[in-house]
Length: 129
Ligand SMILES: [Zn+2]
Image 1: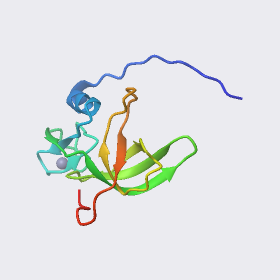
Image 2: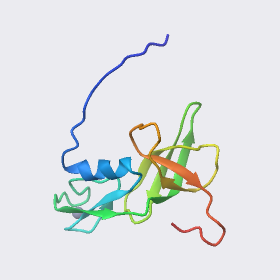
Image 3: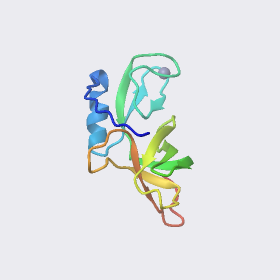
């Protein structure tokens, strides 16, 4: 049995507003802890290592390396490490038929929320991100 529900909701962005605004423009804006230097993407308002709330914004290139991927019937997801970040990110793949191990942050044209990555082939000898 399949049923559909429609739910209108708003999640207040609060201190993470710059992160979400950058994401909508396919730009990776990470948080950097001023106490320990950890760079988190997705951004956090409290450091996951030292619990400091003294964080600042730092722009990443948006390039990421695939750590692991899961392919489903309707959608594919991956665990990726964005260049410059100390954390891993769970993303949805925009072009899962490609078997590349690198990708770039890309917001879907239809406005879907979340982290999405467009897989890209990197030429031999230039496989660092
Ligand atoms: Zn910290």
